[in-house]
Image (tube, rainbow, N blue to C red; front, side, top):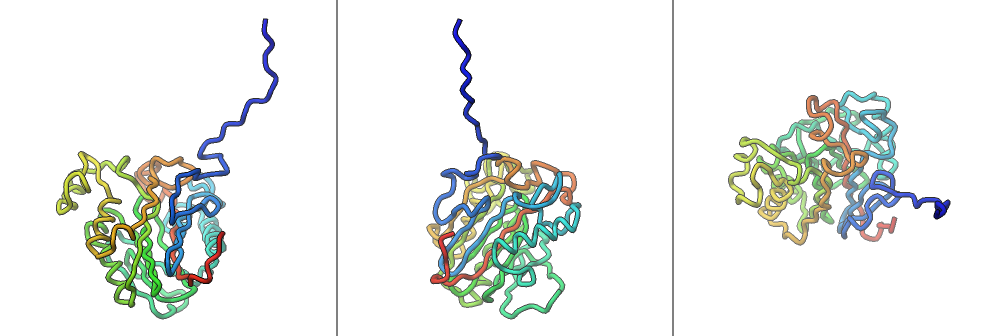
Length: 285
């Protein structure tokens, strides 16, 4: 009778547990920054955060930054402080809007008044240095627009995309003097998981079938690429991290559709931020 091996079994790691969260999943210009994703383009840096590294308890575990959620607000405030430390920009230098799934994009060229009321919009463009444009998402597309003259961050759900929110974001940034704009699409729901009804399909009838509309699914990232292309941003200047928030491991991203679809306030939100960075000020972290 053969003896049983007493050698310890190799430890199996999963995307939830592995120290190398992303493996070879990230392609240039995206790169891992701890358990989050950074993207450096001429003129600025974007960061797309996961739900890891915060203090919120279940079901918001752990880095929920959504102020309009049913989470314990002191935990959300602490999570926001942690995000501020990671991007190196204090919270009083965050530019945020009250997201309403529309198409308005605000341009900020002067420091706002302290504790100014948030305006209803779904994008922020700015020429200010040392300020970050920030949106929160849980399946919608966070899209960073970056140019040497300014940056913008757009929250793009299907309603916003149907109303040309990305085109308006590009136009707003061009009003501020930006010329060579590049775009970075962060983690968001993919065509693999985004099953929709006829109302959503009708919203994208102007786009070719098989591009935006596939059977009973919608391809929001394709819509985003087409909209940016129509706004005269070359496709080689549009970068997609190509990660789906719904079918990624639950420990990585909040997904309203996957987790708590009955009430949006029962789903956490991850942060996406963009800010201006001079080329000679970039480091290799």
